Length: 267
Image: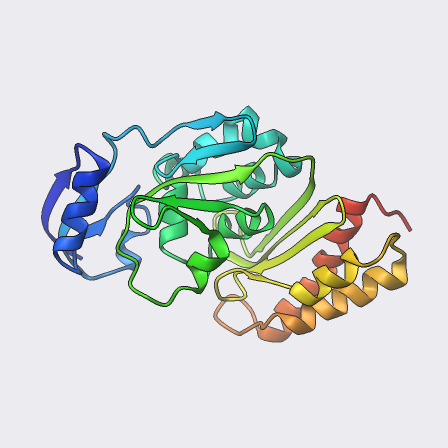
């Protein structure tokens, strides 16, 4: 990788202006996965002076600065309380503490990495992204966008709500990328079932979610049907960490465990 120029932005407006100058100007965030992006960067823009590394609790939502590290997420009492702590659990399972002290939540999102353990629970938590120019956008809308997204992510907003959550990561070793990860959440009658590292960016099982929403009670047969719907709706592929068939089988096992966990269902 080659970086022609490095600068620390003094304001969000300045960072945005420099980002617009050339398509090969990039925000570096924590820099943990920088080598996986462009081989040549004209200007690397550092946001570390802008105070975007805090977590705050507002009346109706939780705000997470885009430069907040994964280790901060892992240790935050606020994050540990939300959705049974699934975002903190996901952060805790990413490589070693040295990486978690560098990698940021904003960098994990903006890279749209298929191996991300962070995007999966955020999608299950209905996360909203706040940008300098685009302002508010759902995480799903951002991931679906195919355009070259030249904007500064300021913060991630999660609506405050009473909700249950489940997260699980399957990896060959504790320091490896996931073979598959899954997040399941329930907010009243609203469900989210999300598969990540398929190997591809996280994807929701909309049909299975709607099926569960329409039912007042769950049974083992209902859960099994929802699991089959979710597994057939999301596409799984093959790479060096596992086959599509293996991922499909994992998806069924852990989707069932997730739905059981958020509904407190016991056989």
